[in-house]
Image (cartoon, rainbow, N blue to C red; front, side, top):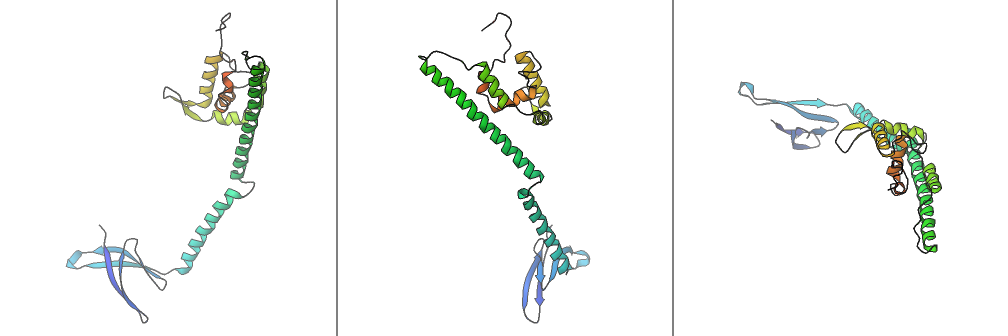
Length: 212
């Protein structure tokens, strides 16, 4: 239950009524009055108030919180911090993806123009071009190892490490442990980043004499 105390403050300078209850304290000249408890025993109504007068302690507490918030905000913009390292890593990845996208666009554009210049004859992107794009966009080993530690959920609802999922995918599709000198996780990350390019990559295993 919630209780409230209606008090009258008598001061040489002012006299006023005030209602004290939970989270609604009386603050008068540095003194803070809190609703502590309420007693109805012995047929009497008693209200118990707690009083606090600690200006210096309150000041130090709020000063500490202020310094804490300032420090947290400063960390977001200061150099050589963890946030700064993460920000630079994200910028590198973004720059790498942009470079790869430009290279892929140039190759695909040249492929399109070649089709038009040759009377609309069907041509596919060459293996050399594919290898060049994959190499330029290959995720470094350290990043792939960090990706391996993630736990993901497959289509069947099973939770498994990302490395396990990537290995199963590469083995099922290409019948190999690696593809073009890329580990399973590097292959999966490349597919996620550039799904359109992988339509042209001959990764699907075909039995001998089966070209369909």
